[in-house]
Image (cartoon, rainbow, N blue to C red; front, side, top):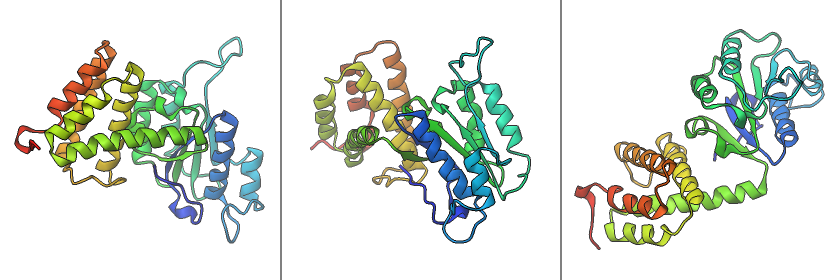
Length: 271
């Protein structure tokens, strides 16, 4: 995962996912980042004492915009953040800042964005208007589309989640390492060792592997010598596996498919 640095506000990531066990934790971290982005004081950012930092802390800075789930007629929060809300944010991001050198958008409960809303955010996350920053506060980053995650730096405030991500990385990278060797027998052995996973763990593996490969394509991870065409092909294979899992195809069949289709015939080495 990419790390967000506060040393120079000019080089803060333009889009960031902040995950924590509670909404309050992720929102507090988002406000720290917003302060760093909007700070006008000398020295280290955020200084915490300049007019901009004070306004962010008090929630009255005109260039800090927070959106989240809307309330229904009974005052209860809706389950999802809608595509209309994201489109409104996207339009507002094209408007120049009021006071600062940039505008910061905090999306609370961003993992509640429905798929249409997430897809509407993709272009904004990849190529935001000059000076715009988008901070996505989540409890479960796994609910975000891999295409959304690949466009954002990530800050994980939950040690438990960080450990889960580390284990997920380990599994996905082991698979990709087996693929990169071109050794069909080694790949088959690895698949056979993992075919006993339950459906949820298999789905998590497939989703995380797409995320890891996307990072490789974007240059955020070493590509293990796998060319762009190969990586793209592996993403398509993982998407096929995801579709099969949705119709209750078992893990054994999924790993059997990976053992057979992960390597082009021309690159297989029987060792």
